[in-house]
Length: 411
Ligand code: C5P
Image (cartoon, rainbow, N blue to C red; front, side):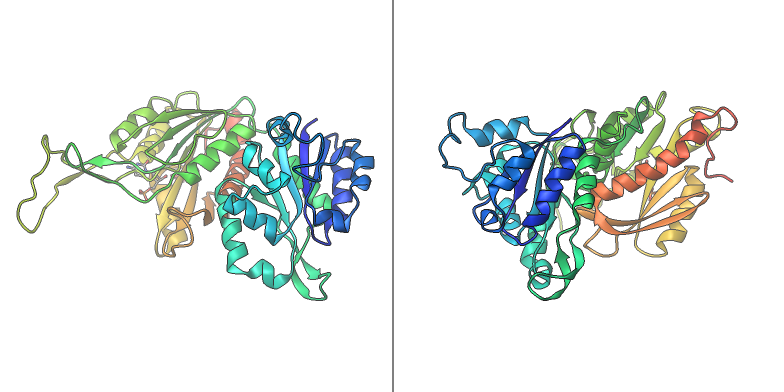
């Protein structure tokens, strides 16, 4: 049983939250309802109180609410903050860090996962301000149950209708009770860029934020795997329950990854490893002349090395996943890379636009394996991570069986 705070905000969809609360309870969860003032104009708190058998929190300053600084107490005891319906107003307040009522304060105070089910008029939904705020919230890890299309209370027809309660309950369940499908497995993930020193103060790097690898590591841990994340320099926090190994250069990443492959069921190389590293100057290079020529040498191709060592019989049961960032002929080039590097799955990434791939919140990828391709439309990196691991899980039983080793890319 999980404890779920259900935030209800002031939209006509608030009535559907009653059914949502009931569904969560039927699924065995303890639900505490927090209503904004506007929500109470649509549905009476008593309705929720009768269903949840808990006092409904309707204000920051109501008597009793401050005896134990309730939003802090609730914030630290919940497993999920779900807001359904989430109005444009609450989405904006969450994104902006406003704390002028109980629900906003709860959002800031909790470290529990956050799930939002937006509902609003179609034009409000499409507005850059709302979409920008949602991107901000997604980037902080919030999950969104997309609104449906249809006849809206305002008389319009279009996107913006609150998702149906069973869909919201299923999304909440997927967060608080992810199936432990990777339990007993060890997953090794690399993420982030590498920095290659030019001299003692300068380096060359790349724009990888690390979000994709971190999302894969976080999702694998949620599915019960023991996870090691070898990370280049990033600005993002380590996912919960993951063993984090920090490295800086391609050479360090090579050493950290290769020394940990034994025993791994899956290796996901999501890191943007530098292909060339400067020959490091012992002292700071003086500013001298109009041009500076850097001599660079190839770094070890970690993934290719793993593929060829596996083909030679080392780690026969380890599934290998790589990424391929391309700007043209994406799928063909990535498929070729999969065969050349002798890996099982390549996540092909079109990085020609600036809304996806490197240093963004979202990604559109094609998963390429020996038995076919899956094209995934633009979506948050957490969703891409789920799709990658779903595909990996389908490939794992073949590895766990004794009949044949991994179908490496060399066929
Ligand atoms: O050849 P390319 O760099 O496009 O291949 C990308 C894939 O190879 C990614 O999975 C990346 O993590 C991995 N890679 C590596 N070592 C390198 C360069 C890339 O493991 N030196």
